[in-house]
Length: 133
Image (cartoon, rainbow, N blue to C red; front, side, top):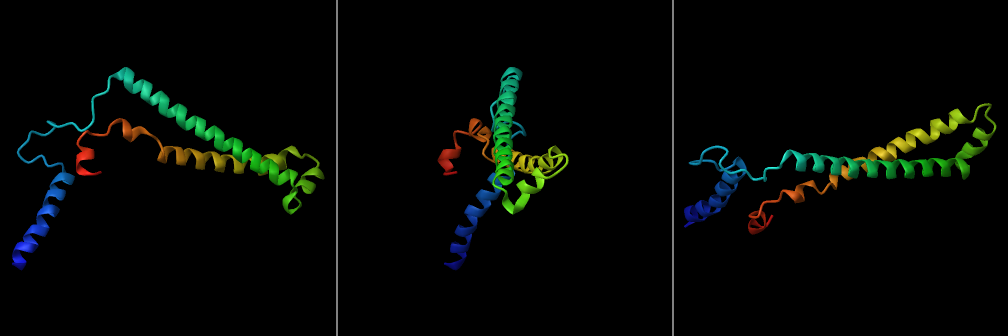
């Protein structure tokens, strides 16, 4: 009785492992391609769309970073605006405050765009829904 239960419990694990490895036992390798073939023109268009998506998110992040840096200066947080106002050349301190914040926000927005990129949805297999994934 216990042996049957253990055997039954291990069957799903074996099926899952076989599926994760590719399950090509008895089949010629490369006989099942999970993703559809793309023409070179479709791949080029897809590549441009992805780059445009990432560039737009990076630009929005940089804009938010510039706004945050400007707010730090204009709201005089920590006396930063007063110190920059008294500087002999105020352009350099403004750039030293705004540029790192803008690049940090731009990089964070680009990273979140990469994580949220809708690329995987385009190549979802029909049998993925049947397995509950």
